[in-house]
Image (cartoon, rainbow, N blue to C red):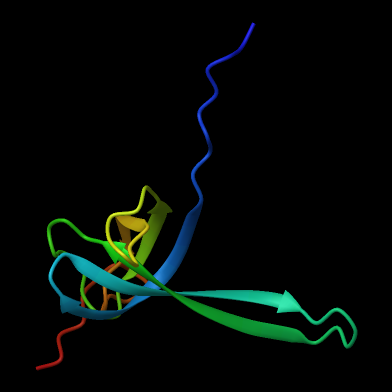
Amino acid sequence: MEENKKRKRIEKIGVVVSDKMDKTRVVQVETLTQHPLYKKTIRKRKKFMAHDEGNVSKVGDVVKIIQTRPLSRHKRWVIIEILKQAGESKDGTVKNNA
């Protein structure tokens, strides 16, 4: 008897570094790993192209992306949530650069 198992989709949290394309954002995800021999912490960065249907995210926003089917040649991720908007302080108020 075979169960109907759903595949767990991969989620990542990153920062939007480009919003110049229509409905597409470039999200940079940073991970910390330890060097196998020298044990020094290494900061690795990778950029993902993610789909943003409403063009709501801006450069500097912290977003959550989820893996999906291929949407174009490079897009395999979708922005599902904006965790923190650019220019927002820790207490939730938005800074005004006027």
